[in-house]
Length: 294
Image 1 (tube, rainbow, N blue to C red):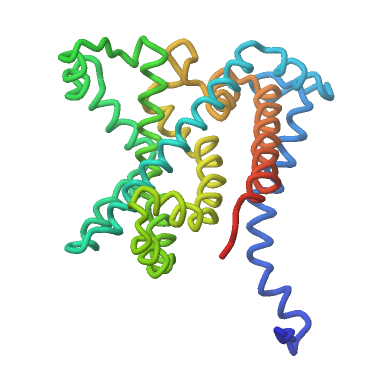
Image 2: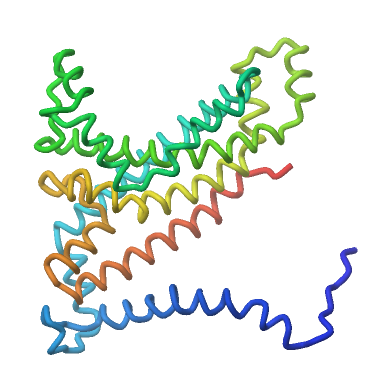
């Protein structure tokens, strides 16, 4: 039985958690409460005149076809980014785990992209796939593929998904490598002795034991696709063409900071926060049931 920790000073525990509580209050609860309050106001662009309208902003937002399009775009973008980033990272982790020579150097190279800022990552991909000067875009045209992310919505979505997934692969790679190293090699060796081929050993032994790591990364990648990809979309497509890549977080920025529709923008931020919290709760409620911790 674990002994209970007792502090000699009753005030000391509160002093130890006070900095974290202060950070949480200042950078989460206070902005969230301000957004909730502002979402019920109708303001002019200069903030000189306000009117309390209750839930009118929410009704107007949910009835807007452009906002419903942003929900669809966000769903496609989130699923595609999380799947590509996790699948490629798992493949690279498995390959890196089998490397015998220069393993540390190989892993270091795969970690580097995580140090690149989102906006810089987006610009790198835009330069490579720019329809006029991009090297890879030139190769695609040579293969007979009509590639133009500046005018074609599907091409633009593929480009931002690729840039966002590339940026996140390194983060996922670190956790998958750590998860692979924690798997007892004796289990894999016993399966190999029994005649199981590498592909079967992976799906019947390795991947089930990686379930806790996979579930954790699923939650992290979902939140990443919702929020942290703003810089990539802003740098690469600006939500275009024709709002084909305008995700929910980018629409909040576009309506609030560009068009100065403050009340509706605040309502969108509240809805976005509710969506992310609900998705995370669903993942923990239903997906975690299939996760087995060793």
